[in-house]
Length: 349
Image (cartoon, helix red, strand yellow):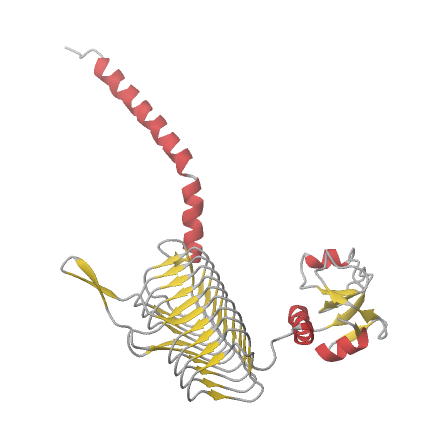
């Protein structure tokens, strides 16, 4: 990065309070920033760090009296900082260019303009690759698959047959999209495979993390809505439906035929039972086990998942169990002593 504060303020639409010609050469956290770097302040406790930062400039929603750095005032500093990171990434990223001679392209494949296929990429028959798609080394695109414009597929990704990936998606290394769903029937003492003949459809601007797995439907479609963000090592089962702009953190698992609404947040290592419905705007705290449907707007946690406030009360109560057990044992001893004393008293004639 090498920009003046004036250029940065214009890019993020902020009001500059400082030297517009001051040059910024990097971005960093508030505590770690060095001279020549720019950081941001969300507010609250971070305002105190602004007083001691070594950053040359800071993105803030308002200027505190004791901040030694130049300030760019923006309504949402964290979003403005993310915008700068995106700008830097766009100028620093070096994607593969052109078609590598080791790429293998099947019959009747439609390649758009400015497509990049890195070494050892395999494109199956009848696949459709739109303009500006980048596919890194070792990735496999199955027959009949469709990849939308501007999508980037990183190394060693598997996108199985008939899968559709929307425009502007990012698929990180090792992800597997369109593998068979976990469908088996136990018959006559053995597991019999149920054929998985459906598809996976990803909307636009979906991001799938490294080594995540999204299973194809048994029949019909496993549907991932526009703007959904899937972290590393997430498992999404067959026939799952996920609404637009939901986010799923690492190692979460979603069993088959679960329906998830829009703007849902699922924390790390959470597990969702199959054939349930999660309403719009639900938040599921990390390591929760969701065994039944959840109404829109709720926050749930624990196992089995319950209202988050109730779960917090349960956790507090659990911490009191050792003391309660001690008191119960003490009361038992007292009762026993009273019973023995009553038993030993002489009876009146």
